[in-house]
Amino acid sequence: MPATAIVGTQWGDEGKGKVVDFLARDADIVVRSQGGNNAGHTVAVDEEVFKLYHLPCGVLHPEKISIIGSGMAVNPVKLLEEIDGLDARGIKCANLVISHLTHLIMPYHMILDGLEEKRRTAGDARGQIGTTKRGIGPVFADKMARSGFRICDLADPETFRERVRYSCEEKNVLLTGLYGVEPVDADTIVDEYLAAGQRLLPYVGDAVNKLLQGLEDDKRVLFEGAQGTLLDIEYGLSYPFLTSAPPVTSGMCLGTGLAPNKIDRVYGVVKAYISRVGEGPFPSELLGDEATRLRDRGNEYGTATGRPRRVGWLDLVLLRYSATINGLTDIVLTKVDVLDEMPEIQVAVAYELDGKRVTSLPSDPVLLPELKPVYETLPGWLINTSDLTTGDLLPDPLQDYINFISGMVKVPISLLGVGTRRRQMVEL
Ligand code: IMP
Image 1 (cartoon, rainbow, N blue to C red):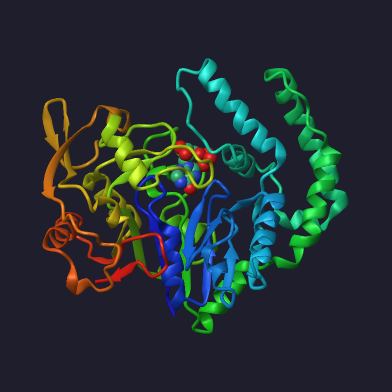
Image 2: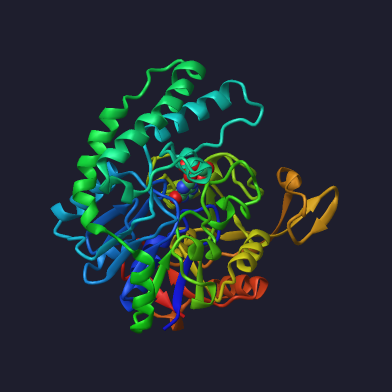
């Protein structure tokens, strides 16, 4: 049985959590493949709101298997808090499997993430990235430098202690020398992580095998994307304003061990407008009152950090790029209700660059900040969509908006999100 992927097509915060929760109804296994607790997925179940950071949204369906794949990095202390928080609300993560290859976010990764950001503001011409300060850049840098720690390392306390001491020697040179802050204490870290490990190790196992076995047994697998394509470390293009892991479909294979030909359906989650947290080019960005209205109406404040998100009009040039990179077979258009009161809706269909109209991204990413959006204006639907339950009752202007997007991107829109609640999804 092939697998289905759900990917963010923009700069994250497209409303993937709710889409995963909806599509997880038909899945047996839900997998997260990359990133860490920089992600924040909000899911409203009846009157309850759940905010998940490391855990796949599949855990809200406790009978299903949830997998944290090897491409993720976890903060064991924070992950336990998440598990315990759900437990206190009656949700047991009994079917959670954490890949033994998953990397550990160490306390010094978070400290360095914050200090590196500060240093960039102080002197680096590149300026700040606007990271979530969860240690993501430093943990993936250590992973690639082969000096990181995997969760399976917690099963061997002596070697773990020895290696953390060694690592801290190096990190403390940076902390005290370059940054002039207090050193970290290796033994304190080890004691805290081993204690967390004792409780987490029962969840740790061979996630690749679990997944392959699942597919062999005809289980339905759902990949839960985190962040968005335009933050991808390679294909997000606006380097360095990116995250350090791959949110694209191919990253899901890398981060779980599943072969690419096992994924046959890729849902791209597209917010009906667009947002970005952190720095970096954003051609269709809105500013001033217009931005404030859209931000407040869409509640565009970071789940993980509470930061106000930058907001703008939907950008179809970026979306076409995302559709190609991810091999989208379907689009899920979310937060449609946020635009309900707008008499007119703008959509970026091209850019102006050096006085010329271009309909695709320039091959030289250095030109990204120069792009001026060219908009098409479409009439708003001006009705409350949040009670819609079927696709037959869509107002004409909304149907036109949908047709316009799918026509330009050449991918069908098969689901609409019209509110925060689980039931507020419309199948087309
Ligand atoms: P990092 O992943 O914390 O290193 O942050 C790098 C960039 O990715 C920053 O611009 C963050 O705001 C952004 N980012 C990271 N995770 C998310 C997410 O889940 N949603 C939206 N933006 C994110």
